[in-house]
Length: 426
Image 1 (cartoon, rainbow, N blue to C red):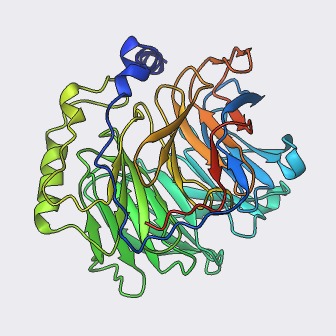
Image 2 (image 1 turned 135 degrees about the horizontal axis):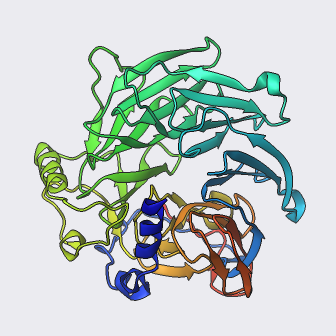
Image 3 (image 1 turned 60 degrees about the horizontal axis):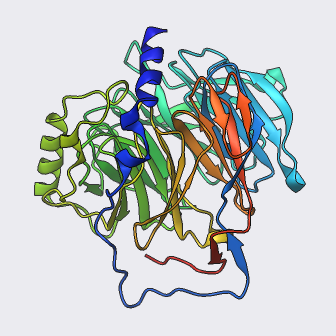
């Protein structure tokens, strides 16, 4: 399609190079005096060696490890959902499921907590649930019954007990589907624009996070939430453009948001934004007159100074957010103490930030164009990146892939040491 070719041409432009993203760090975060950093005598390493694992004929939109790291789930524009066995260092295709009722592409996937089923969404009124073993009788369409004729769930999350599914959609609403009752139990008019990201704050599944193209993150409490009068318990303002992804630290306190304003922000939900912050953020969004899907980032969009009322703890700059809803996440607790934030990038790299300093500590190459999704193994030192590029040259491995959209796995090498027990208690 012409539009896709145009996106590719911008991704390969000279302006979309390393140099275009240099020198954009946000304010340095000085942790409070009570912040504790524990050290261990053993050391782990940041991933820095690229090796190819698989490639597809079309674009890879999603890729995520299971909670235990023994499986990897990938979704591609070819409408296939692939499940890989990653136990004991393996990376072998275990199963391929043909996705149903797909419009454009599968846009998000997630495992259920018991890792017995996977969920996926697309441009459709339904979220789909299918069993890992591929039993067609257990491939179920979950009707969200939206009011919009053209409807899409951009982001999915499963509750810790596996009974509920949370979704964020293009109609600005949050949806909760109860699997035991087999029906939608909640629809919340949450944002003024597309809801691109949702997450549960912690294992209790009582607090919900949402992020939208209106540039706001909102925090919702299920215990006080009413569908007829939905009120968030707080809002987080400071981004100048739409939010593409959010990730919770899992402690019901901190989260990060990735944005089309080319930054990641760290938030503490104990400090919500005042009214003037919400006004400033909304005004900044209305002044954006470029389209991140196919245009290059204008210089005016790269302002560093904080908006009035910005209550973010830290801002991270050094990656590109173009073409698609690029994801960012906290690094794993077990191997890094969540010391890092890592993100996909429109330049085809994985960018890793130090949570405390905001500095870019590693840039991992491997794709020739946009990396949409990234997933760090919960216990091992590797990251898998999923790319929407049409060709990919894995320079570190000297392997050329004619039809990428595939993903590369970044494996362990003996560089970039850091104490495995070093934790960031921001």
